[in-house]
Image 1 (cartoon, rainbow, N blue to C red):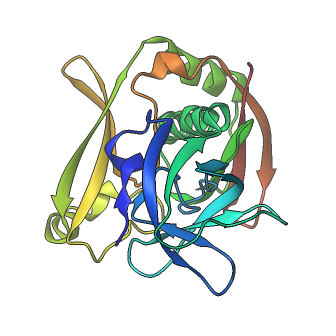
Image 2: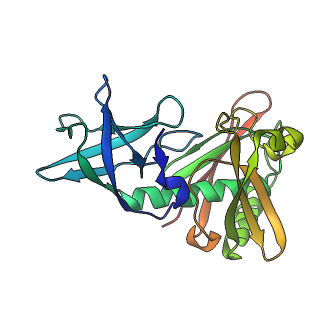
Length: 239
């Protein structure tokens, strides 16, 4: 099992690690993973591995069995040998944009308090699909409410609960299509607060900023009909 450094500190930009496996598909497995693997609508991180006498560009990261993270090299890259100690360096700007968009989507689920049927995170924009039979009457008002929450410099924190705790509180799960990862015996909750007031609480394994002020102003994009009851709402970073 890989030590998940991104879960311990989403702001860590560089870390060492040792190559424990090269997969049949050409992936690299380290004992410690700085790179977030593609999951929950959030893309895998990219960056670079360096070691004595070599380097390797990492295009993305994916999940394997259990909590193993496999780094996917860019085409034509030379791989480090098993046992090599490497330095992992993130494409930090891309990661931080994912963190900003991901946190903004949590707030979007507050502004639009409807069941979420899907979602996707990018470095420039993100979207949530809602169980929303009718289009919102005032998109500009929703954008205003979202940016008001962001501007309040809300605090993002986390805590851990057991699978049994989640089973006893199924209302914590907002996403109908994606369930929190199980199997490790514990599930991470991401909490957004304004002083002593709770704004949002939901299970999530992705990376987030520490304060909503880091997100910056968001712009609403299209609201698209995706079926009889589904609407897709997109939001964009403005800088």
